[in-house]
Image 1 (cartoon, helix red, strand yellow):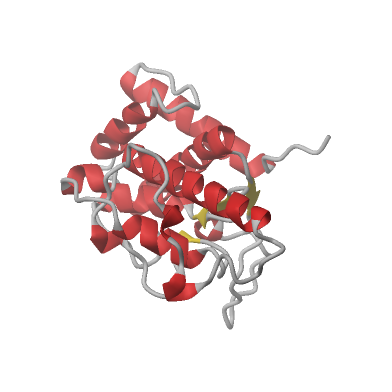
Image 2: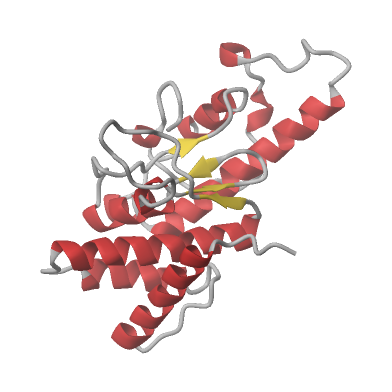
Length: 220
């Protein structure tokens, strides 16, 4: 069976585990329980870091975080890169900032973008730190994010909070997809756009994310 994890991703993720163990004496276990350790590492290791070292931290921690999400929710890595830039003759997949994790619902994100934002405590121009989804699902993603409450800045960009948000939005899209499958005989039962039904509000406990993270238009 083909390994769902590209070799480069696995190597970078394992490097992150080694870096954290060396710096903090703690072992990341590819689970949500040890994710706060990585958040702490990102808050401390980047103080005074040179650009090359910071880039390596973003790449390795991003691959690790992507693997935590993929192992928890399923999905696959997309490392081919989706945008061609004039004058950029690098082979597809060579720009790690373009790597994405695509969940079974189509919800997808850039793990490196989330890590870069966690370090900067804000969006970073060179990275995509928002959520994306197939066009038919975007209204449900936007609606779900808009309903979430505010949190302190230091928590908002944390990887723990990002995982909570991904889990909740993924759960919503699973419910929406199930409804779509049940209503397949009636194509008007699940409208698109502004007519999206209230069924996107699934689950009793919502992770809190400020409305400022609500994507506008394509959830890129």
